[in-house]
Image (cartoon, rainbow, N blue to C red):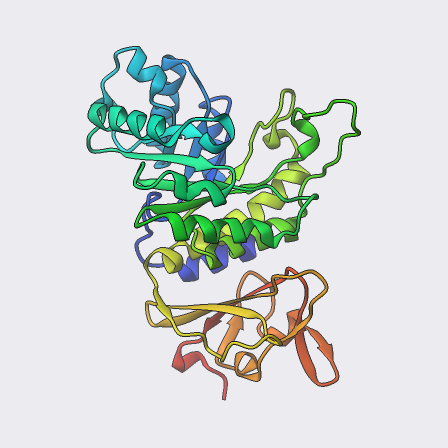
Amino acid sequence: MKGLLLAAAAVLCACSRPSPREFPVGMYALASADQAAELKRLGFNAVQSYTADPKSAAAFFAAARKNGQLLLISPDPLMTAGARAKDFPGAVWYIQDEPDVSGVTPGELAAHDRRVKAWAPKALTAFVVGDARKAGDYPGTADVLMEDWYPVPHLPLESSGDMVRRAAAAAGGRRVWAVLQAFDWRLSPQHDPNKPRIGRFPTAEEIRFLSYDAVFNGAQGLWYFALEPGEGFDLLRAPGLLLRVVRTAYEMSALAPVFARGAPEPPPYPPSPDAPEVRAWRYHGRDYAVLEVRHLGKYKRVPEAMLSPRWRPLFVPRRDPRDVLLEHEGGWYLGPYEVLVLESRLGLLTPP
């Protein structure tokens, strides 16, 4: 599987890759700077840490810089310690985690953003909202608006993409990054400890859908929460669960040039409630189309135009889109929360 993903990545990324700022594929909640190198090997070009120690923050920056990764981290420990922002070029300063949940007012957050930018005038700042319906309460604050929404298993998967779309609508020109679920809610404290714990780790298919659906709805970068979401758990030491995230991270890394630098194109077929939703881009002489079904219990027929020899599926060991679809009464269908990624063949390679 890894060989197939890397082969696809090589085809897609023969030209220069976008910088991590253009389209981060990141992992949240690193506990040690040493973990950054392993995550780079696994396809993550960005890392985040909640460390409150200035020395630890400096170590994270050194590791991320060595690996060519974007670092998302709080500036507060460094500012308090009297550190110089110019010693941390390229870091994105994480000014607040879920102000809508923690009760930080719009005025307080805006004031903190101004302080950080006075300290680091050339750097980007970012914060994440837990509920994008509150994103509009923080207009013009920070350069990056992030959204985290973790639906598994309590809410429909598409609710995550819905929140990303609300964040994009409230961004007002700011970049939008999605923080997606890659943890089990049972590792988190509960509001009522007397109730039974409910949760599970998302499946590989769910993580894949959450990722593409975030891009569909306006995300310009993706982060996965989290490497160490709870005490005693390290995703790097849980290979079966880690693989679920890594599979999609490779796809997102391979498609980052398309998402970041490709020219959006009109849908290759007319919108229809009976057909999968679709987004399309043109990049370096090829067309790319992503099809998805956003609702549970729905099977949608893929239009014949997408089954022609012009298109080949990516990230699967198949040459014909029909080989990865469900056949029913002469039609070919994409199932609930499934995603199909297609790349156009160059003219000389198109079968007769």
